Amino acid sequence: MIKKPSILIVDNEKIVIKTLSFWLKMEGYRTETATLAEEAFEKCKKRKFNIAIVNLKLPKKDGIWLLQKFNEKKLEIPVIMITNHPSIETAVLSIKKGAYDYLPKPLNFEELGLIINKIIERQTLIAENILLREQLKEKYSFKNIIGKSLKMKRIFELIENVADTDSTVLIHGESGTGKEVIARAIHQRGSRREEPFITVNCAAIPDNLLESELFGHEKGAFTGAVSSKKGRFEMANGGTLFLDEIAEMNLNTQVDLLRVLQEREFRRVGGSKLITVDVRVIASSNKKIEKEVERGNFREDLYYRLNVIPLVLPPLRERKGDIPLLIQYFLDKYKKKKKREIRGVSKEGINLLINYNWPGNVRELENTIERIIVLGSGDFMTPKDLPGRIREFAKAKTKICYPINKPLEDIEKEYIKNVLSDTNWNITRAAKVLKINRMTLYNKIKKYNLKRKP
Image (cartoon, rainbow, N blue to C red):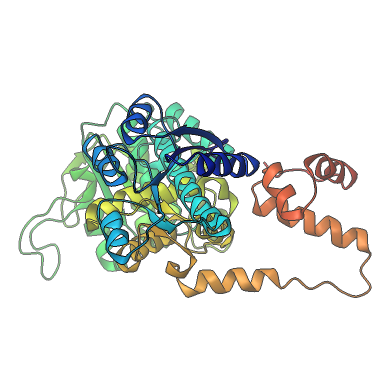
């Protein structure tokens, strides 16, 4: 939040300056005054003001002149124009020259207060979005992987530790969590970064074609094989092969894959020549492969061969503190692509996005932001721009029901636990939602022995 915003009052009427200064200070603002447009311009060149309240008619140069000087020097100061002689013509001229708003004298302080609040709120949003952008440039971005949560920091550390090794990595995570992005980051950080990164979606290729896709085939190996073809292993030689949705691979192909991982050699389908390759394998699955092993759908020996370095990606609902950073990242990405001037998301909009459960994870969030940029209006996204499912989820979440015979302390404990989880254990935010002070919240956490999940 902007601390004690500063407002410049530009008026040649002493009573207006005195009254306005007193009222603004009572409202918590810092004020400075000027009686001439030239004096005001010099002050604005030397320091930053959040708002300027300017009388249209001034001695020598008038308020319109001051607006033009602000524009010439690119001084981004919202101007509220005030006048003793209001007219449609002067109002239109003021707005056309860049004034934020236009008010007649005597001033209606309630109306003025609403305008000032609107400006300050907008400036706060812009400042918060700039801060998010700076954070993205600094420590919270890792090869297109965005996050500042403890879980993501651990993943960043693991990527650094394993990137320069040739060990196989098995990435577990729900659909949309960014498994391929992680695999690419490992490849890019390692010594193979200049070599190919080849992907195979095992779920998208029919069983009878997967073997040929991976290992290639010779001419005439099967109907339709009119020429020899390299497989993905050969294409990835020297680099990395990413096997996405490995749990969908059939058992016969699993045997061939295990042999390649052990021997580093294979034969094309229909061929007799042994082909040697140097390939690092990274695999991923949205299923628990140990469960597939128990069911007989996945070879246990292959599982252990792949699971040398396990990496578990958390779903987005378990790292809600990363959502504002991800929003900013996708805003910057898509507003360039779509050529839209969008400054950010309103606080209400961000809160709705944070509190949604994101079953589709980061991919769903990315698609949501892209949709809003294409269909939204205005330079800040608000709740009305969000898809109906997100707004409806927020409404449903507020309808919490408890059994009549449940003890009051149990209800309080459960409610506090839910609020802490929803706010990612941000004590200040949680206390605000609960409408208690931070010390009371700390005491409640201690009383109910609430602990943050790692």
